[in-house]
Length: 116
View (cartoon, rainbow, N blue to C red):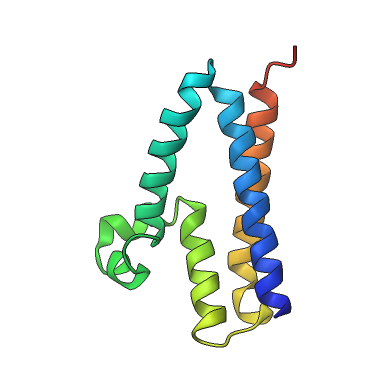
């Protein structure tokens, strides 16, 4: 349960930081919906939220692209925890990558955000 809770917290943090990134790159409220929809659908597809990760990993191009989105690491961590019974020692790398994505999203989003 501790590993699942930590994974859930890091996924929520990554999602929040992605929101900061989106807020930092859009120029109007109307763009938020369009950009976030495109980003989340594409990342969800590549990350294994729409098709199982083992299918995406069999296709070389999609396998490489899937490693560029945080959803891939979140899906893999949840799959390992919930279906394979793995613990923190087994999924720690996925959690570190989620934390790195969170930091990247926050830094880029905060630096581009216009405080008025």
